[in-house]
Image (cartoon, helix red, strand yellow):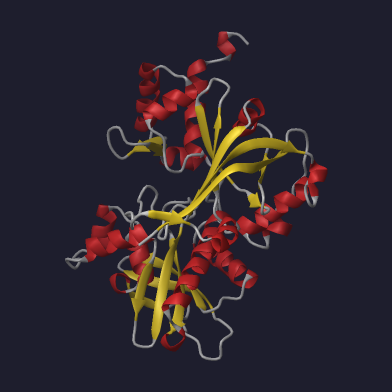
Length: 394
């Protein structure tokens, strides 16, 4: 292909946007330069141009780059808005009858408004009717959503905040959780993030005080986060990392994850980060959905997946699965990826695809997301040669 038909700068620009689209935590200029083998001077010229056009954004000098509003506007339209949130909420509530009353809340200026409720089957239960409105700063759902606002937006929603509000919101970001104990109920809230990072809604459990205890709350928080993650995936999130780069403070030293928790953790709806090596020797990291069969991680690569090309050249990989909230459970696996023949998978490629869809998107995905496979679709397995499972110890 001669130059009039092939413009290297255009190729580099597209590759920058592709890499940022698959890296929700963002990439620095150094990481982009290493991944794309672009001279720093040429890379910075492209990055400055894309920033000027609002196709990428950067919070400050030397900080990671993220996709900007211009790039997101080119993405296929998603059915966002209240109707899509309510539909996804009810799909998930139908999939698993909630143990306690489940509700969906959104921010409306200085108030939080309940959009939908899914009552639990208990005879005595909490009620959070659709249309209920409460002051955001005094409600767990409101705190979850206020914690995701910029300083300017927060000042508009809460013009005269209490002195302790910044500390409260920082704690909410670190825990990705808000909790309030009232006279008769305990209410828990976590974020729903259609882009994987920025909360657009809050998911709540409301528990009568007589059924609340710390052990049960721990289980309900895990269930609530899993539901919020699946709703976020259904709305288009590539991964579930509320508040983006906000990370919890370390709670203490690391300790081993109890063996009984390993399989439940790996079977939760958490995406993995797959690290592999490009043919030129530079690292490539991508978010992947996986299935843990008790001995290996199973994944599907669609035609043209860069990571599939990498592992075909060099099968050495590492996978990490981690929570961005206490107790910061995480698993690191190292091993070699190998191609699986379709008949080596229960149900073939179609069966694995559908199981992944149901796991990450909910039961309805099995019927609304049919798939037909042609050349280029491949399944891979990674049997860990090393597996480290740990959690932070208080």
